[in-house]
Image (tube, rainbow, N blue to C red; front, side):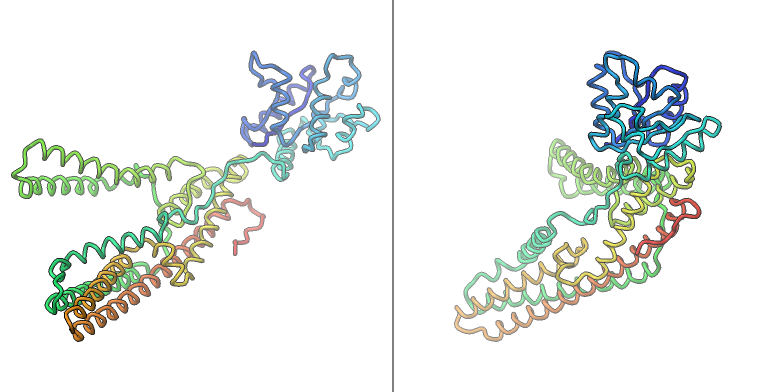
Length: 470
């Protein structure tokens, strides 16, 4: 990470002004990003520490005071200022001559040959009678430089709300549902006669009806989602602790119902088991429940503690980040905002804008890409795909058993018809789910557009360009 290195001599009246300047730089850029050798700790090996700090710096300030030129003529074992400046020039670092108060601009012939380029560079004067204003100009010059100290910024995670390995997960879920539904009548239809073929065909028809029920339910849920999400909304998500305090009845009620349900299960379904077995089962269920709730709780804590915050297309995540950014920008207006705060705030807003672009792209996803990305985490596609897969298995078994029994054309046709109808149900479900996911992504993108309209004027000072990102 780049630093600002203050090069000066430690003897003379100018050290007071240099110390004040370094303090103001540290207040703006962060004390850890400004090096001045008064910060060396006892026991540090001066040349090694000095070279390390100089190497880690991207900007070097050459503090020019009244006797700056004359002090180069003094006989010294090692002229550290000369070494610092010549090393910085050879390394290609940004060197800024800072003229303290009314000191004159040195001429190239008055300084050692190794640092002539220092006096040829554009200098900046800091007057003692308007010290704060001139240092503010110096700070602005450093901040706008490409060599400004680096700051850890927010990074948008475009897939932060998506499951890992979506194709594998969708396939495994569909196969699991197919196996679960397939157990309904598998054993009953394994006989190689027409009765077995008819039973297999009947199971296929039943599963087709199940597929249709799931498809219709999916459509109803999708239509309800369209109605409930009719308008984009900016929701200020408070800290996790605050939300739990405000809505403590919800988790308490959930825990009470969970304990009551588990107690009823133990007393009815596992009444014949010993107390030890019940205790072990209760412990296993408790551990599994804790493991399941740990992830959302940790995620909520990360949203509250991490800065810059994590940002992804998940609405809870980006709303919390936007809310925290608004709180920061409101509490520290631009003139009082430090370099680190401004840089990090800018990175958060940029990440929110990038997230908006991701959501806009999702609102235009074709069906194939939507399926390959996990169907937006929807449950219905995997259910209807699983039942259709089970229908295909039973239809195939019905045809094979019927052919082995010497007929069963009607059963075969019914099985094929049920498969076709099931596939149609799957197509309808996928189309409806895709439509809803697209509209939801578009509304979230519109919400982020609203957030940008609120945050950008707070981020930039009055009079600067407030143009929105495309």
